[in-house]
Image (tube, rainbow, N blue to C red):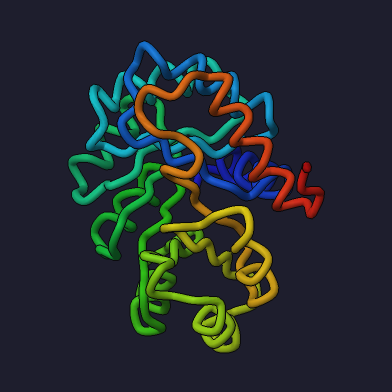
Length: 214
């Protein structure tokens, strides 16, 4: 992995280890929504590739927020990895584990967050060079399962549940050993105003820090 990317990753994780999953965002909305998220302390921005013109949105966000890590979600092939890299993305998130995708991501100096569900997938993903593990779908991985995985995985491996995460469910996962989360439709839905995204982003940020607002 590129050293500067790794340094940015560490800084982003320390700042707020929440990945904003902006499924369905358009290039016209990207910068305003990005402003709302970065203003609330978010530094990890993911544009799923099944969004409208995702590479253009990634390009705009990466250019506007050099202090953030911007990348793509729903990445399934090595060709898509190359496209994300060309657009300026530095983060590659997948719904599954594919060694070729992880290895291709690492070769280009980017961060790989593959989706895993089992211990076997988790160890295989780490062997391929995963930067962190996306536990997906989290609806099938309750806190008790996260605790079981945490017990057998190396302590420095970051576990990030994704899928159905709400502010009120974060504490249970954190207690079980989760290091962060990916937040999708509870944070952003297509057509939401930047102001609405900012409000939602603040609620999640406060839930992470344990200062839920009334």
